[in-house]
Length: 400
Image 1 (cartoon, rainbow, N blue to C red):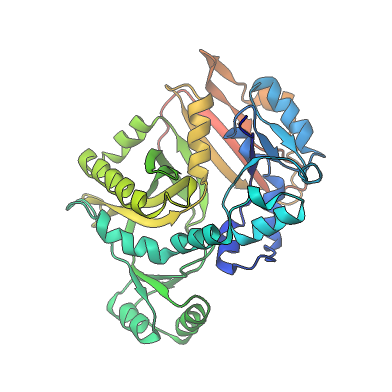
Image 2: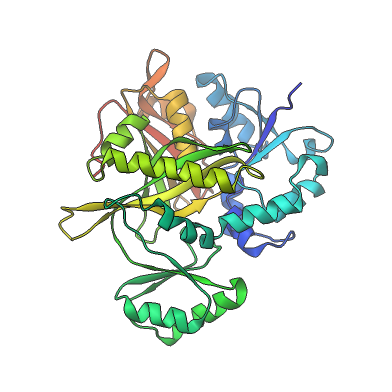
């Protein structure tokens, strides 16, 4: 009999990969996010699966949400893990998580070997995305330039040749590890480069692009091949930090992207990614991954746009996957959802009250799918710093 899946939300994954120490401890903000949003996998796991989470306030929330969504998975705490047999599905695999699970009594046979963790780290490196990019420039509708540089002289030359450039740590947290340059290689930039070269051996250098919107393609690797799973249309802050997703069927997302880039280009890029990643990943990687992209403008008036097909590769579950799963499982195909991650202001009382939530934006169903309404994905208390919510509308929102 197949073992149930155990889902773990470990948002410090990218930071842990960069550190690569089995005893790594994430910053307090990442630990708090992991604790407060531990129930996020409720929304992409199956009914017979388990989600690892503290039970104190999560159990009450899960039971309340189960009244509206009967097929949500069950919870399990760290104290209950020892001796259990699961197929473990974390947000992402790294040495720190493996060490943590071993200390909790999880059998090593259920965990990936060091060789697999090393390969995940290698292919999560921006160096791999930089090397893949030229193979995805399918036609004149694509753009993109990326260089993995290993000396301070190369980096200085690149920055001086590009009025607007961005330097990237090969391994860093999402939206972090970036150094913005304006044609000047001053001392702070030089010191940043020296530190990254010393720590990680190289720096990824790219020209800046006039971004019109963020998007990504989602894939799944089953250790035999890599196959397209869906699109993700997402939003980031001015600093590149993820804030949310637009939830609608893939055909509508593709139609939206076709207003900028030809359908033939999107599909050619998709097939090329499947081919290239099927050659690189399946022997060791099992799970979701996302290839971040962006629509870029050739001018300020956005009259001509291009697809940058490989800004970053995330060898892990992504928020785009979560948003897509919720859209598939719960939203009516004629409605549009907004999946949103919010930073909650300290001291603001937003404690989750199921009855009040239903009264404010009650869920309206059509054929057992949500047509309108709002629902929280994780419990929020007066001391919370993070919240995750889905708002569903029956009309197409203005997303340009």
